[in-house]
Image 1 (cartoon, rainbow, N blue to C red):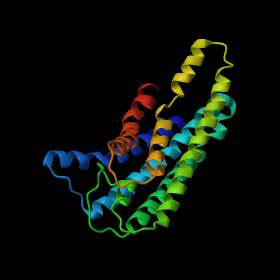
Image 2: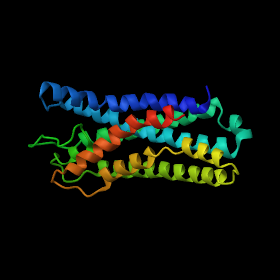
Image 3: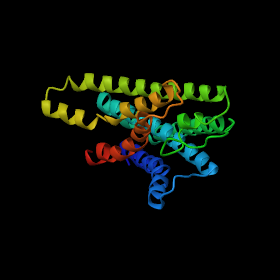
Image 4: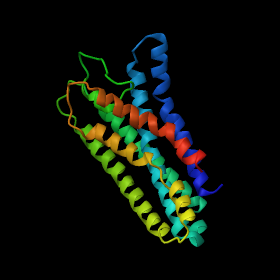
Amino acid sequence: HSPMYFFLRHLSFLDLCLISATVPKSILNSITFTDSISFLGCVLQLFLVVPKAGSEIGILTAMSYDHCVAIRHPLHYEAVMSKEACVQFMALSCLNGGALGILYSAGTFSLNFCGFNKIHQFFCDVPALLKLTCSEKYAIIDCSVAIGVCYAFSCLACIVISYGYIFSTVLKIPSRENQSKVFSTCLPNVVSAFLLTGSVAYLKPGSDEHSLLDLLMSVFYSMVPPTLNPLIYSLRN
């Protein structure tokens, strides 16, 4: 019932939802030798992926703050990371993720789609969908991307600052064994890769050409973190 396990429970649930929004459909298409998805299914897939990813970033940020308080201020830990505070962190993460999901979904599917309807992705991703639109201007998407990237890098900055404080405290511990113990439990290596690859997918200049790199980046930030998080946070813990 500690805050760490409170966040881990919700992180594992979000990982399950995130990977369930894309992989089952891809597997089904492979088994049935089809490569189609309905328009409504595409809308639903995008709406499920973006909020889950946004909420997961928020939870990872809260977990870094939790580690920071536990190591730097252990005597005040229970007062700072109370049940109410954990619920507020969780609610804020879900609220931010939901807002991003609504922005991206409404902005993307308010555009005009015509002619070519083949998506060069294994799921309905915003950059791939933008290549199919006839609209020349999509201010809502630009605004959504700007908000999403600012949110992601704000979370990344908070994570970096938290772990900077953690490492500065840990280096003062005289025992090498205790230092390595703290380092090994406070290094979620997947976080920066998850944020950066996702951001690059939306930040890089648009192109009509379809590259293997676009597909690999989408696979990496949508499938690798949910797969590695149980190993990093649970088994190691």
